[in-house]
Image (cartoon, rainbow, N blue to C red; front, side):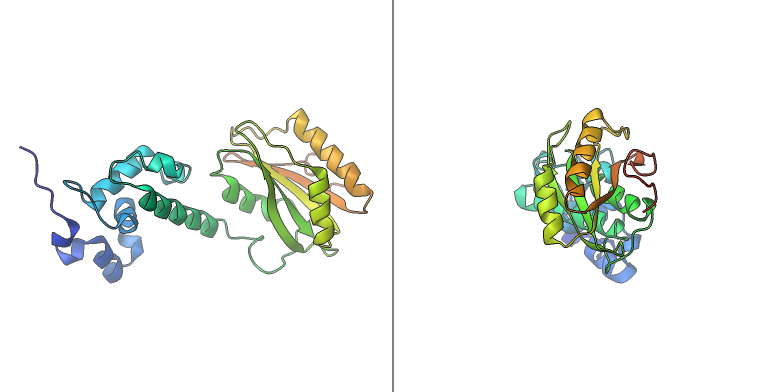
Length: 238
């Protein structure tokens, strides 16, 4: 005999996710309870928590894997329509950005070594399933003026146009730049294409007296710095 399903509104107040959060704090809720608050309501024979558990099941109860699911993939759970999937995706993106808050996210911090920004980039780009290429623009004191993703590619790679990069560098009054991209495969070793593109950008930047300080590759496994490994510039020091 199938157990009867009771809507969350019929639960004891202390057991309802929203009430529990209000009374005890978000840290005392399970992943499924927090997700249920985003989902808001269930469907026939399934409460919001039941739906939340199914959504977590898509990612084998791993929040890191959950953050990589697309809106379309989230919608594979019956009862999770486009609106609910978008809310979940937006919440996960906010969580990732909060986790990654660091040297790039406050004021105009000074960058002295690759580690100053690598951990932020790793956190920020870890959930991208496609390769993206970006640039950090710095002033004369190595303070960050701006940073952004320049291009997005496919599963296996992306193409960055040096002309676009240098145009943006001039617009930002950058004296130096740091290139970065992710490797969704997890492999941190630079490819020949990575090395060739870096050399091309370095040569082009030289004509405008703009220094390329580093090219940082990130994945879930860590990061690789061209500068730290002697693959860029005349000096390995920033």
